[in-house]
Length: 239
Image 1 (tube, helix red, strand yellow):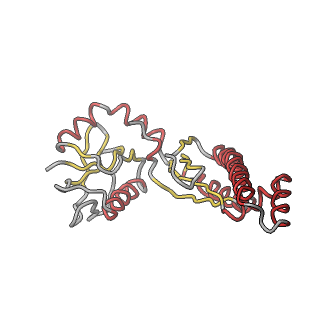
Image 2: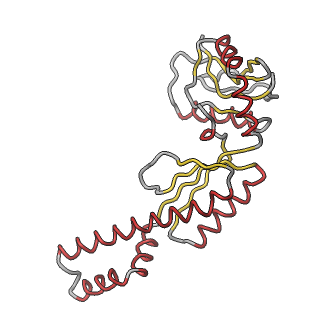
Image 3: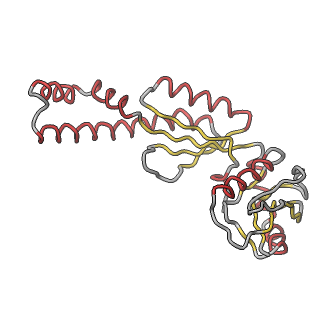
C-alpha cells in the first residue's frame, strides 16, 4: 500500500496522541517514520483518494496536532509516496534543507487575511469623496432618474471609482498588517476578494495581528476583513 504524507517534523517522534487518525473511511491510523533526526507523519493511503471535505479536514487536523508540539513542514493534501522506505530515503536525502526550514518556522504560524468591500458602504464612500459623481447623481434624481444612457454612464463611473478604492484599500491593508509579520505571501486571486494575503507570525504575535485586523475593520467600515488562523505555515514551505 502507498504511504500518505501529512508533514515533516524534527526528531524521531512527535509525541502525537495515542489513537490519532487521519484520512480514509474508516479513518486510518497515523504513524511516524523517523530518519536522520527527522520524522515524517504518515498513514496508509486509501486506494481511492479524493479531496472530500472529511479527508481535507482530517489532513489539517493531523498537522494541527503536530504543530502543537513541534515545528512542522506541512505538505499539501494528496502528497503520496510509493512506500515507507521511499519516504525515509527522501528524509535522508534532503535532511539539511528540511532542518533549515524547520528552524525558520519554529514556533511560527500562518494567518490568512482576505479583504473585500461592503457594497453599500463603499458606494456611499466613493460618492462622498467624488463631487462629480454626487453632481451626476443629483442631476439624475432631478430628472426622474435620468435616461438609460445617463444611468449607464453613472454606473460605469461608480464602478471605476470603486475599483480605484479597492487599489487604495489593498495598499492600506498591506501597509497595516505586513509590518506585524516576519514574512508575507500573496494568495491566489479569487472572485470577490481584492486582498488575499498569507502572513507568517510568531505564535506570541498572533494576538497583535488579530487586534490590528479588528482596529482596521473598525476604522474602515467599508472593509469586510476575514482572518483565518492559526494555520500550519503552508505558504512558507519551500517546495
